[in-house]
Image (cartoon, rainbow, N blue to C red; front, side, top):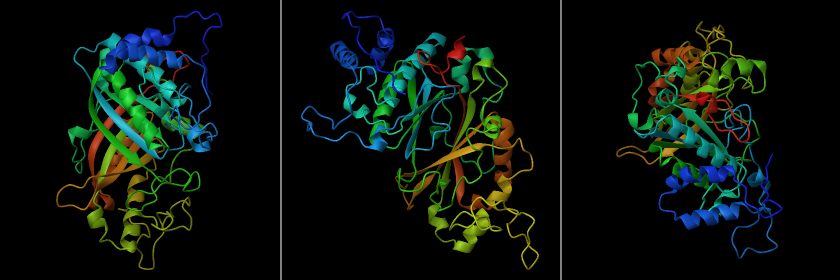
Length: 424
């Protein structure tokens, strides 16, 4: 739903939220002159116009934005967008560290500004003081999701830190790089259009400048929108069908797995996110034949079906034996180690591939951004990762190089901001 802002009929100027936020936004813009900000605000106070080809000399007969580009995802709601949203083509995760002088009131001001601009951008409208407003016109299902690290919560309200909001326990196969781990504020930007995502990232980064410093950015991708049937399970760069077993959003089962129902009041209806950066050694994976790959995963690479079934969503039979009496699905295969009989050890997973510039002496620098959503990461995700760390055939070709645990607050209503319960 798009909310349109019309100027008062009597021509008077009423005090609006954008004017209240102007001071903080101007600090984030930096070199933009005050007159430029005023012009940007004036432009945004005019009625919305239908999206057409950008530019002052656009052809009057130009066609509107395509159906994909015009699609929007509401920012306001009970839960934050970008969690149950059907995954977009492009996703970026940005981490920021609070500046030493950013206190409780500073965090609150920052989240007001970020939430206001996130609402605008996800509706295909320019952010406050946007100097390239044309780049915001194509939303392409843009979502913006915010997460808090433990330090941000401590500064806002030291008594409100969830007991699970802390780094994961160490794992023997981890090779974590601090340059792609942790952070006080996490911003997740996703869209079906890379230009839209890039512009949104720039606007949101401006908003944080007076309050936090950039720590890292990690960017991932999936197949392009429309290239596969909606709902098709993604493939990672190993060619593996990745993420077959997942709770279904909108069900009671999903709600129990993902949404926080106890603990600090400000987190009720929110969730937690574990972000793991998993490096994949494609160079050595190339040397493994198809049978070896199937055995390592426990599923057929061709269609994702378990080795004991015919279709992707068939339930694996871990008791089945071959003619020699050995398990058809190896006890150290990936799907066997990830599975548990404990119904509490379940997660909602999403993933994005990354493919960065290769390092010297290698042909690739690629892998997976693994996202795990759950009510409590220490009781749901950590035990699964422990089993995989101890004995998983895929460990021969992967390494966990980045990690972070974040509190994802619930959504907010129009006029509110993400994390407002933390300041109640």
